[in-house]
Image 1: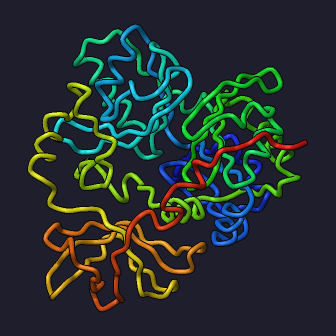
Image 2: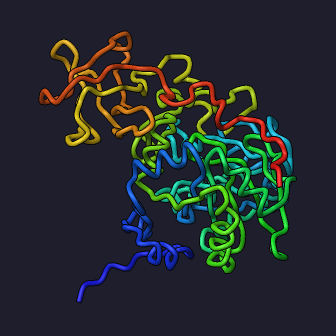
Length: 381
């Protein structure tokens, strides 16, 4: 008998009870959708949704040299954020400047950092951080806490109402990428004002043994705000609308931050870090391709797949990475790499005569980031 074992998140019984269509991703069984992906996208944009994001990789880096190790591992600069108060988005790069993963690092203390990796990158990131620790002879431990730490996201314009119902109005003082510890029913919960949807949102991190009951508490607290569960298909549409990259889809170790549109995370003035020499060369010499946004003139019933070639004047000009319907914008959007020699081209033919890709600025949705960065006043009772 051949059996393929997959992991289930602590919220799995709730997904089954709610009638979710399940899917496997990265060795995890996760909800694909509950009603329809488009409906779940629009509900997140207008009200509030709850997301099972437990399968994302989670690590703690602890020890006397934790700051030195993380500062060396990251392209971004920890000195730009406040200890104990904030997180930071960054790339982790290899020595050739290729992206090992894009992560969020929370600066808990000089000797303790908490970071979130992509689901598919978890083991690779653990190996890379351990290798860098050994390279530096750093007095630090790299601890995989993925299973021990539950992870739940509450996203949407009404998410502050839900967060305040759970943790009190103090949570409303968190700004974008802020973090704070709150006590809930005697349990310490790290609340971070982050997310993958392009909306106001909060992410909850707490011991996994409380996860089953925490889901019920979040749903109960969100009932007056119309909270609904949201599946993985909608997450991909939401992140695509916001132009958020997906590791393994829009970038991997064959890409560097500059060509992936993440050059703003590279801080050359902070000193030496993993990949710094290679990235300095890339910055000096320029990139050969660039991640670009598109609107596609195609039907939603026949979307081109990842890797579909882009052609201009009969020549290969690049390829698509992400392709997604956009329920919010009412069109099909995409991302893909374009050879730098075609950078000024406004329209490309999809290989096989499957339609036209028209270059457009990213993000597609809320380009000024007013939604995610909105100030939250105290929620009325």
